[in-house]
Length: 265
Image (cartoon, rainbow, N blue to C red):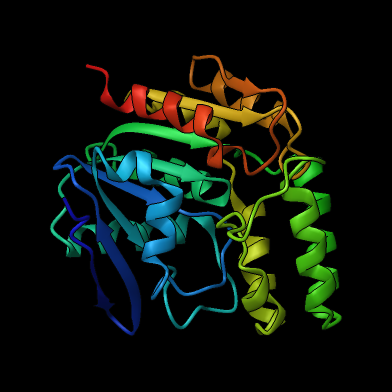
């Protein structure tokens, strides 16, 4: 059976957003990616390879960042873009997975549109800009604005995976290294700074849908403690994969747990 891939462009007001839909199932699953400056267009086959376990069971929707991007970006604004895009595609409700910055966006999506989110998975993310994340963002922005995008890509790749867990040819979807090296640094800096605008912790009690929080014990971008604190705010416990880093959500055992959570009930 094919994955029935559909790609296109949504136009809302003065901006556009690429989208991709794929998967063998009928239950909608909205996947919100992390800090990513590569356009979604042309990447669907790679996404299917990376998230095949979900594509075999769900109908996956991925909505890209808006184009053009404003100079100042907020996670809550990105959440409204995702919601508008989902509604334009005819979605009334969906299960939601948010990776890293995508998890921040997913929190605002759930808080502002609780009727839309059936289940929520928050991967290696945070509800508040902790010192670990703040330092990483400051370092990335500094390197980017100096124009050394090669050094930036090397820095980010080294932080995504602990030693011995480096990927093969397809790196984490947070960052496409070849694209990053040639991307305008100001745009990357704006997207990176948006990570520091997530401040949902005092509102987490408003989230009533079933939620799963997962983290990597060797995550040096957000820190595993960020996942623990986020889960505590939701009234649950985080599942920490002690040997995995920030790209933990790519691991088979991690994805199996998420799939079981989404399929149960």
